[in-house]
Amino acid sequence: MSSAAAVHTLWLREMKRFQRNRSRLIGSMALPLLFLLVLGTGYGRYFSYRGNISYMEYIGPGIVGMSLLFSSMLGGISVLWDRQFGFLKEILVAPVNRTAIMAGKTLGTATTALIRGLVFLIALIATGLVKFDPLGIMIALVFMFLISTAFVSVGIAVAARMTDPHGFQLIMNFLTMPVFFLSGALFPLDGVPNWLMIIAHLNPLTYGVDGMRYALGGPHEFSPLVDFVVLVIFWVVTTLVGALLFRKMSV
Amino acid sequence: MPFLQGGSASAIITLKELTKKFGEFVALDNLSLEIEKGELFGLLGPNGAGKTTLISILSTILAPSTGTASVCGHDARREEDSVRRCIGIVFQDPSLDDELTGEENLDFHGRLYGLDSKTRLSRINEVLGLVDLDDRRKDLIRNYSGGMRRRLEIARGLMHRPNVLFLDEPTLGLDPQTRRRIWHYITNLKNSFGMTIILTTHYMDEADQLCSRIAIIDRGRIVAMDSPEGLKESLGGDLLELATNNPKPEFLQSVREQEDVKRISTQDGKVKLTVRNGESLIPRILQTAQSFAVEISSVSLRKPNLEDVFIKLTGREIRDEVITEPKERIRIFMRTRRR
Image 1 (cartoon, helix red, strand yellow):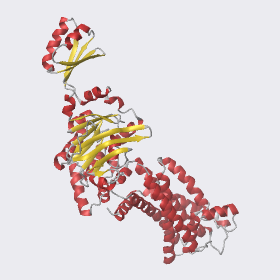
Image 2 (cartoon, rainbow over the protein chains, first blue to last red):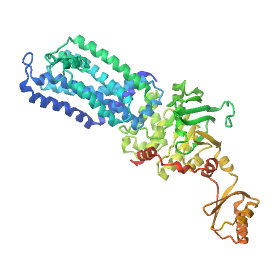
Image 3 (cartoon, rainbow over the protein chains, first blue to last red):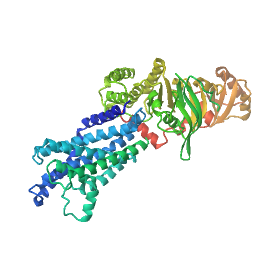
Image 4 (spheres, helix red, strand yellow):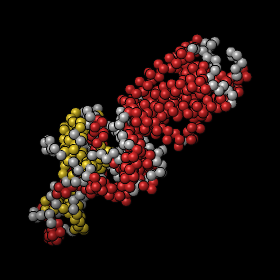
């Protein structure tokens, strides 16, 4: 069968599963929402930054990035459940190229992450925390797509090397928390100590969130072109590594 | 190689000196064998004998260490896609997506095998009818019983009309009624599609009932290969058992000299005989016992089964190894929990 049809088949399956599982959708959105509301109101009183932007307005795109990061990285776990429940075998003995399987799985999981991110974005627009600007939203979507597919690939790459879903969850929490906190998602980077500055500059999420801030009319640190190029490089690397490890995975 | 008959044109599966090692452990030891088109071929052996490893190699999941395996004329290692297209598999462990409905699982399979939407729909109807799951097609798999899941997996394996169907322990952990029902479907398949079916099992009765030819596998080797009748015939007769608490040597000697007695052995106060014409032999033996003043408390005569063949060939009972491994317990648990 053609690889495109295989990608579509795998994508469709993720959509069906997502549709059936409302609790997972709501559950995964609770933490980012908590961050937005609690940090936004709690710290908001002490926040002053370029112009008179409120803290909630500032972290809005960061929270969208958080939602994308968490649901994308943890999405790799579906590979492990598929192996645990034997469904992976069904896929791997089909006359389908493994890279197409990986691509379908990545796109499917990334789509579910994007839907969550989009729900946040719409909520931010509806509450006036983000201005409604169709072009800006289109650009933000490009960044959101790059963030989610790249981090799904990271999740799948780790999952391909593991067998235990619980261990995977632990490792993912261990990875996602620093990536989230050490990015520019929650605070502006100018004026932070050097060590944090260096880590944040090495963190791909920093560029993703910065690109989204630019697109959504917020204060940003880098040129959007820099954000875009760095993310594309990260995207290419993670996709290649993910595909490679997935190909090597045994059932 | 004792079982290799030379390249037959009608062979659909050919193994040549196939060996699979996992580190030091030899899972398959120099297997050579041919399976003819249209056969219902059984691989019988205890757990850990290498049956699933062999199926995994034939279905391109594992690569052999040395030797070759060809399926439908394609090398299982070098022409994976051609092999995959011509086979269907029902795995030993469950392999359905239980968050999808029965119909959706089949549709997914049809898409993966490149069937267009019209063909998918007609095949889904066809195979669901075949395993009597038409009325449950819209139900999520998580609401299916163990037997229903098994039937759906068999249906799925048929969706793309494979030339060869592998059934790896198709009735493991199922209740007797469901097992019989699945046997019925399997026989049906063979009769109506003329499909080649390779079935692995450690249930003797299953192999005996279904298969036209059986290879008995033990510790990665084929120890015997024949029709079920041929295998049982190879024991040389029926099995006669006498219970006595006083098996005098002179009595045993006299029994051994009877014309129809092929073999004799004693074990825990029981005298075990392999005999011909058992029905007419019993009175003669009882007479002999009386003349030696040996008291016989019970007599049983039965046709040999494949278990007896296995014991004779390996010196062990096949059941010794059943459900001792934790993995096996989990497997049965997974299969039965939703029954």
